Amino acid sequence: MYVIVGLGNPDLKYAATRHNVGFEAAVSLKEKAGFSTEKSKFNARICTGRIHGEQCVICRPMTYMNLSGNAVSQVVAFYNVEPSHVIVMYDDVNLPFGHLRIRDKGSAGGHNGMKSVIAALGTDQFPRVRIGVGEKPDGWDLADYVLSKFTKEEIVTIRETIDQAAEAAQSIIENGITETMNRYNTPKSHQRSEDE
Image 1 (cartoon, rainbow, N blue to C red):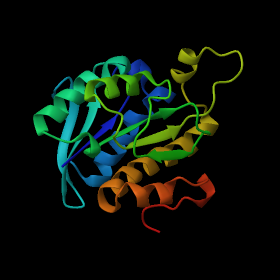
Image 2: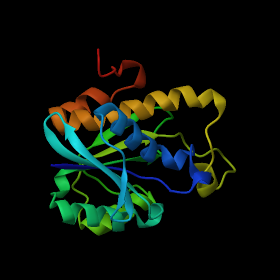
Image 3: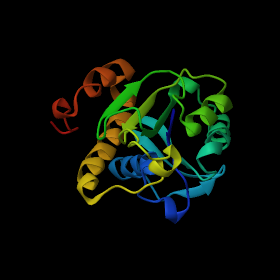
Image 4: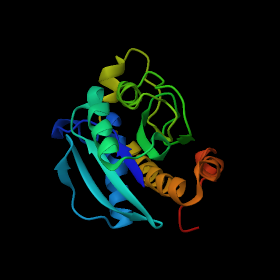
């Protein structure tokens, strides 16, 4: 069994911001996998179904980013899922805009949502799908930047990247983390869509 988490903030004012691409990747995965309607449980919006034969829970914490671990730990405890089967999708300002980076473990890299999840799970040994939202421009406050919305020019690219993040999560379940890293940890121009 797997728990796939998309990190973000619940209020409408945060929709379509850089900090919420994890939320959007979770919605994309839900649609691709044909899961049922979300329900509110464990301080989160969750839905369940099967991906490549594995029972899965897709989770969007409703606790705000800094407390994401509270919801994740409740879901993981209820379904008795090992950390190695928790996949977290989230925004990363250290990655070029529109790029993905798949990792099997690692630090939070300054991301408050990931800090909360790592603290709640008691380990950083779990897969993650990092979605590049671009480096903070000079003169910008980091919080202001990650809570800013995408420009019209950026929207098409980030939509594609969000869909690829959902595909990468599916690939981790179907093919394992090593094969998924080999496939997606390349320059964007060389990434392939799921149906190629």
